[in-house]
Picture 1 (cartoon, rainbow, N blue to C red):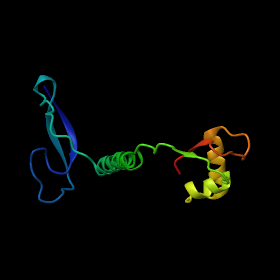
Picture 2: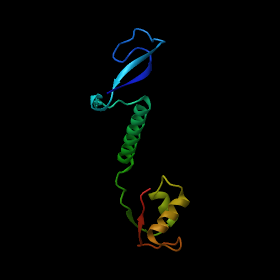
Picture 3: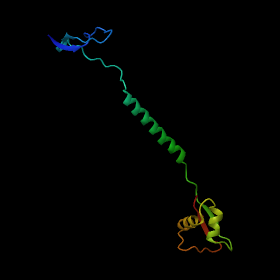
Picture 4: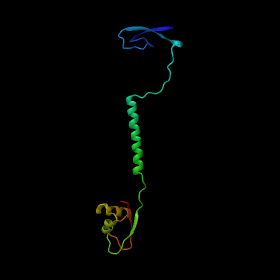
Length: 129
């Protein structure tokens, strides 16, 4: 059994040198005589290629950030308070890259100190800056 369809351009299977403007009746097989679609290679559209590229770049940047910033944290250092030292002087000496007020706050939090008073012989943990 066959069916007739109207197509625009050249008949199916006939390469056209230029687009034709006439209509042709083409016999199309139906039922068991119809050709089965063959599975060809997957073709990515322009949008698909863009999506794959963006996804790859995002994955690479996440992996790169994990390597760059995923290092182990430095262990806190212990310092014994000597005679005449204050928490301010210890903070300025041990955490020179951090503002003194912030350094004092971090040392107090790391050692669970309720005040800024320290005494000689006391051991303090200095957090990594």
